[in-house]
Image 1 (cartoon, rainbow, N blue to C red):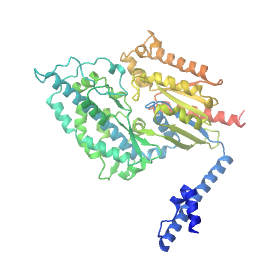
Image 2 (image 1 turned 60 degrees about the vertical axis):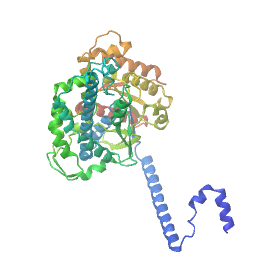
Image 3 (image 1 turned 120 degrees about the vertical axis):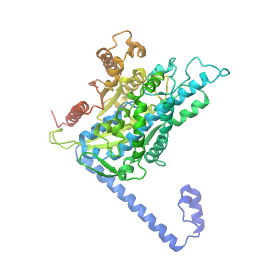
Image 4 (image 1 turned 135 degrees about the horizontal axis):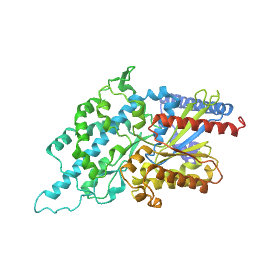
Length: 503
């Protein structure tokens, strides 16, 4: 018998791994066999549940499937939140305590952008005016700029304004926010649950010391979609009253520190010199996702609980593919209960060819292209204009033969920021060269981009299909909910027609 065991082990590499430990006692053997039996029982139960679900799906109505696509910061997560708010409002609002932590992280990271800009200004003036033996700079050094800021950052910048002693005191008093950021990141991304991805801030060259400072801030928290990060924060809230106030009992809650720093943060953000400093570095925090600096008094209150709008505006990057299931309300489907599944694909834009074969059974793809990105560059490739990247991604989706039968719905998104930039005089034709010298107004530029996306849809689709296009600001819940209701109804109607249930 030992010889036979040896032959099996040599022939099967797994046999050595699965073999009982040497010198195993009877008691240890019984415990091992019991553990193996329990593991098999659980495995069989999972298999049975999967088979039951598969049979139930075959018997029931075919689920309606929608895939959300678009580059990073295009509004995919916000669109998903709108679906959740519209179809499962009670569950959506039960997660407010979790989103409170995300809002806090957004606030801290915005303040850190300002503090880093102040540090750069200090370094610039110290180098320029430190003495006769110090080389004089004739231009501003390469400074931080946000991936959501203007690509004018590549041009020559204005010298940063000098900072006063009061500014430096503010900077020192806000130092505890660094610890707040670290605490929040630890809670959001425990070991093995997430990673940091360079998406939010970029570096425009500079020396080694600048790069060292950049590495600390040039990373955005990215949560793996498979990690139930929201559950981490449920224990932090002890009670939520009818008017939305909450009591937070967790000793690690960063709320008290943020509340103590609130007055200094408000002073810093409203300081005209600081605003001038940010302009000199072409940083537009108000255009970045997760901007709450205009609501600091409210979001730093000790009993702050996020509103629906706050949750929609909060920014937390997700990686991987996530599935979200909804049962549509009565009336949307003529009294028939329909299962709606929304798939959100997070991660790097280079992964698009990899996921396409897995989503060839989608009823529709909802593609988001932020028009506001016309003067911005990609964080992962500063040589690529964000709007042009959306056009290229749209072309790859339209032309993919595996998606030839899928309806495509285009959201030309973030029109609120787009309009503000046009009003501010940022020339559309300067960045989108094909636009030329046409009028720099919303009607002309938006119509041009609609024609451009529509032409690609018509020329590159493997077969003829209807072009659906909407101009959106997905943080506007009223407008977006109406658009999504119409989309749900049209997709479900088409789905019922395809199986012969409607005329």
